[in-house]
Every structure is written in C-alpha cells, then in structure tokens.
Amino acid sequence: MNLLTSDKILDLTENIIHEDTQLHKNHLDLTVTEVHRMDGAGSLDFGGSEFTPSDSKIIDPEKRNANDSYGWWDLKIDTYKAVFNESFEVPENTIAVITPHSHAEKAGVIINTLYISPEDDLNDLNMHFHVPVAGCKIKENARIATLRFLDNS
Image (cartoon, rainbow, N blue to C red; front, side, top):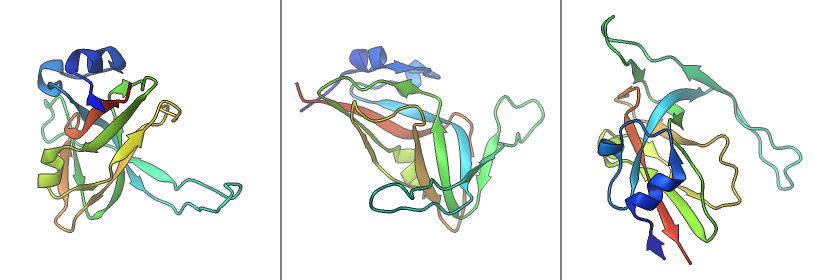
C-alpha cells in the first residue's frame, strides 16, 4: 500500500479552507464546521431492523468579540460529533483513513479513527470525539483531524 501524494489528494477533495496550511506531502488536515452534542440514545441490533441512530443537537459557536470573524465552541466533558468543512471521494482500490490531528490529541480530546472504503456513504461524514473533565475550546475551522489515502493498486 502506498500513501497518495498531495497532488492526488487535491484531485479528490473539495471545500478546503486554506490549502497552504492544510495540505502536506501525504495528508490533508480536516477542519470542523459544526459541532453537535450527542443528545439521545441510539439502538443496535444484530439484523439492523431495530437500529436507530443517536440524536444530536447542534451547538452554536460564540464569538469572543463582536468584530471576530469566527466563534468558539466552549465544550465541557461530554461526547460530541464534528462535521468537516471538506468533502472527498474515495477511488477504487483505496482506503481513506481519518485520524485525530496531533493538536486535538495534545488538547486532551479523544477522537475515534475512521477507515472509509469506496462503498461507504460519504454524505454524512463526521467523527465523534470526547472532551475530558477539563474541557476544551475549539475555534470554527480548527484543524481537528488528518486525512490520508492508502492506495492498494
């Protein structure tokens, strides 16, 4: 397996906020556009006929000053869902891997890793994360995750 390079990543990705900051040799930083608090229980069963997704409630960011361009989410201990600004496609013989951004890990946020194949639904792409007891402040468009493509052709 080989990592796709930045030029190929650009061909597969849309809605990049700031290419010079986000794009690296073999990966792209993903930014957060929405944060939702997980607000209701879902249910799982073996066959899927009784599956229901958990409810979530969008949290509005708050600007620190009236003239700020972007606001902040002041998150307390809880589980949340981050929705990305960016979107992408996954070509045949390729797996997309989304991991926590190193800054998110250093800020104490615990984030799951996603493996996405060409057959997966990319219409509602998001990732869940947990904020520790101390909390975490996240600014709109913060780099929260890292996207890499593994090519198996």
